[in-house]
Structure formats: C-alpha cells, structure tokens
Length: 111
Image (cartoon, rainbow, N blue to C red; front, top):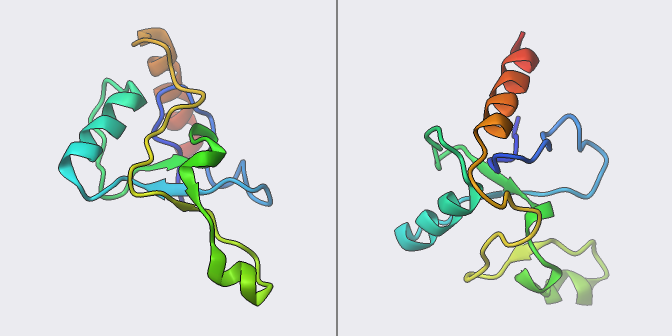
C-alpha cells in the first residue's frame, strides 16, 4: 500500500493498479536520501523506511538496462541507476495549499 511521497503527486497503489507505475524506495545512502527528500518538497516528516517515490518522477535515462531478463526473453524490470535522482514532475516550490490539500485527500482516503 504505497503512495508517492512527492508533495503534489496523486499516485497511489490503487489508482495506478494495472498501469506501469513503479514505487521506488528511498536510497540507503544518507546524502542521496537527503536529496530525494528535498525534491519531494514536503513540509511534514517523511519516514524513508516506508516512503516511496513513483516512476513518474524519473527520466528513462535514470534506469539501467535489465540485460539478464532481456537476453532470457523475460519482462524487463525497471531498475534505477545508483545515482538516479527524482527530476521530473516535481513541485516548483513549497506550496502550503497543495500540501494541505494532499493531506486532506490522504485523510479522506483513510476514512
């Protein structure tokens, strides 16, 4: 049960079911982790142990070739490069109205 950690993204697991949207874990490296958090533009705390960022925020060039599955004729996995950083469809600046509306939508979903 994932929702994208980006402040303005509306993607969550039920909405994207059946679509090719992948939810990536935050990196273990503290420096890269801080960069990802800053890109999300969230005012509330992000629990990076459970938070995810959807594939809508990454460029195609941020993914590695899944050569193993390609050679075996299997479905290719979308694997992020180690230095990938969310860079697409991100909030331009902190916008309290967008963030509060996201919190309200999240609260309504849980009801």
